[in-house]
Amino acid sequence: VTIVNGTPLESVSVADRGLLYGDGVFRTLLVRAGKPLHWSLQYSKLTQDCAALNLRCPDETRLAGDLRDAAAGHALAVARITVTRGGGVRGYAPPKASQPTCIVTASAHQPRSGPAGGVALHLCHLRLAHQPALAGVKHLNRLENVLARAEWDDPALQEGLLLDQDGFVIGGTMSNLFIVENGRLVTPLLDRCGVAGVTRARIMTVARALKIPFAGDRITLERVMAAAEVFLVNSVIGVWPVARLGDRVWDSGNLTGLLMQSLATDDGSLD
Amino acid sequence: VTIVNGTPLESVSVADRGLLYGDGVFRTLLVRAGKPLHWSLQYSKLTQDCAALNLRCPDETRLAGDLRDAAAGHALAVARITVTRGGGVRGYAPPKASQPTCIVTASAHQPRSGPAGGVALHLCHLRLAHQPALAGVKHLNRLENVLARAEWDDPALQEGLLLDQDGFVIGGTMSNLFIVENGRLVTPLLDRCGVAGVTRARIMTVARALKIPFAGDRITLERVMAAAEVFLVNSVIGVWPVARLGDRVWDSGNLTGLLMQSLATDDGSLD
Image 1 (cartoon, chains in turn brown, blue):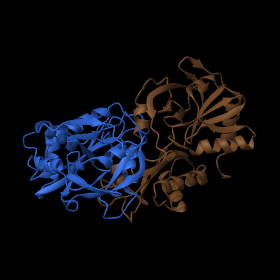
Image 2 (cartoon, helix red, strand yellow):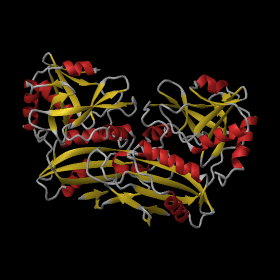
Image 3 (cartoon, chains in turn green, blue):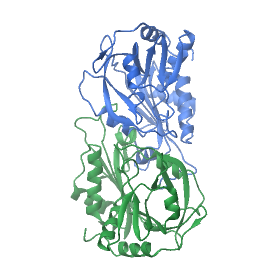
Image 4 (cartoon, chains in turn red, blue):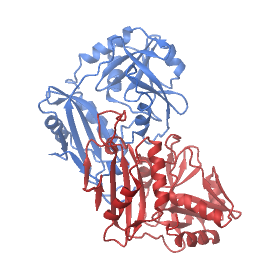
């Protein structure tokens, strides 16, 4: 079911700036028994991303209601919230009094757990461009992700690893990346490209609670290859241990296992 | 009037990848008495841009018919063709058998000729990112243009000048740029960012016919400031001489005037 601006509807205007220019942001999240998981983190990130584009963020209570309505009848649903700058006159200039379009859609969640032991990665040829004005934001301009994901269709490869234009590792096409080096957790800095997801933030919070040393850094591919453990995260898959990238094979790691457990037992009701 | 996949319709599915990811391309062009101007160039560019995203380009005759229908009743209309990858399963992976969505919309053209003597430019703070995989393509990921255009709302400034991340001049937020140096026409290379428009291509063709020396190059802001003449082009505005950028003021230039005339007398019926 889809809710557009509070009303069940399956379409948007052809004049919507989300379609015309990708002028908007989105979130993908799980909804269990009508309740969005980790909602305060999700809404907080949506608010930040709207602010990055100078978009008015829809009201929190109204959005949670839309999510409940869209996910009605599903024990566990995967939902998407899209907020665009709405319609208006032609041209790139954002209308002064724009009326955002809020699209909430949900469907039954079909878990896509990776193979036991972890996932295998494709190394993407496409390099992410540096755009500090949009880095970290989950906006609707996702052609880089589409082109990167189109590079492989071998079902034995579950995700693609993306580097930036300088050759630093940024993450998966739809996930954030962590590596373990000498018992320390490291994740790529996302100040020039990439999307800073909510589950990435949750990992940092859990690491702090468990007193696991943690840092953001520029990470070369060589460091990933040399890392003791590698894993990917997002709000729908949770944690995916990485088992293979090219010739490099990883056994399941202790720290990854610990973080998977910690995340699985935290459904966000305490956020 | 809007035509979606051959049918009058004002909306698209919320599951359309054009909305979800900006997964598509577009063209903006003039339609006079039902005939799209410079159609062979426009369609050729649409075909190239679709190919860059591995999208199937709609049939030329059908598109021309949609443009005629959408522009019916207008002596001169401004039209937009949008081609997206259509709907499909969730996720960045392009569906193997995607059915493109083709949106053709048109409305009466309200000419926005700049002030007599030329336009004044805002120098944009936003720097365009380098993405060779998408450079030159008029795709739907236009947040950089939106953010750049949002930087000013002084109606005395008609366009914004965009530099890339290395400080080279790329063009306007909605137009291509040319400078005149020692009687030679120079335009930015668009191999790393920017959109290579049809009117830019027409200028090159006219320059060749008139035996005006011509080159594509990396152009610094200093070179623009030192240029004898500067002008902007796109398919709707035609040629806009630049009269001012910051403290630099240009008088109307001979070569710009000659090219304006040459373009105005060529309505594309010979393309």
